[in-house]
Image 1 (cartoon, one colour):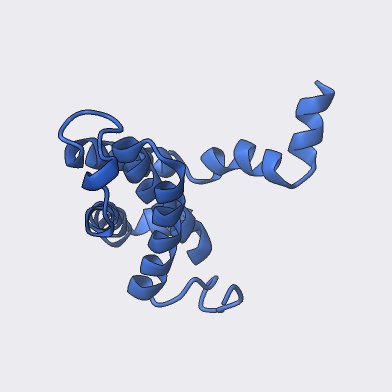
Image 2 (cartoon, one colour):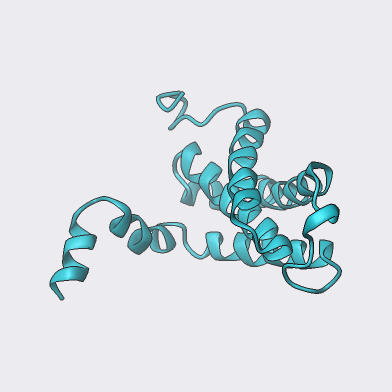
Length: 140
């Protein structure tokens, strides 16, 4: 109990892992499942099969763009989704997690997954125009 309580109360990584699914209202789960589905589709139906010569930046960008389009469309089509994710940084993190799921499912590699996460964050910023909280760009 003490270990769980310590990570929960620390406000660090433990709290983030504990609270992120709760505070994103299963939208994060939807984005990650859709990302994995997109990644497996790009991999030809087989998990972690894009490796070696088949792995290039064009393929990664296509997967990331497909996942970002899905996520951003959900935010635009359903305003309550955007209201639930109260800050732009929360939305950017959820979109990035979905993109990371897509690349992880397709490649099974960590470095391209981290690159997908970073590229999706930048893509969200470019598409949404800001990461701010209620009009304030505090995170920039």
